[in-house]
Image (cartoon, rainbow, N blue to C red; front, top):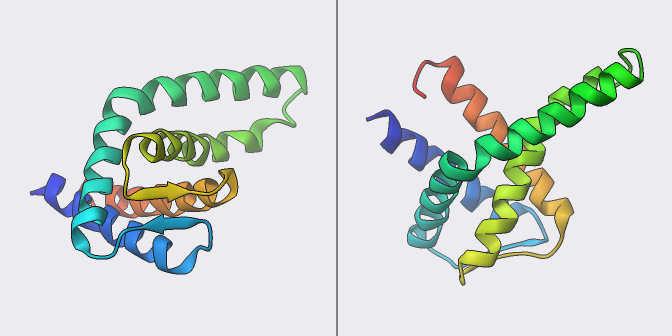
Length: 124
């Protein structure tokens, strides 16, 4: 049940991003949004953990090298990983297009925020 709710929330976020962000293009209807949410979830399972591991290691190294000044970079790890997964989904899905990295980061932030809300509610 929680997987279905997560996919529905991700699909709603994808439809909202496609309507409100100028660089995000998604075919109309709920079908492409649900497809994007499923592809995003599968890519996040298989690829997202590795991206987050590499970004967290880079943020940790930068934090050590700057004597703690790089610590706020840890807040961007989830957003950057989601943006990277979204760019991979952009390459895989014909009905979904991201014009540049800027809308990918904004959409990645929205997806990270919705993921955080789902985990705070105890759903995911």
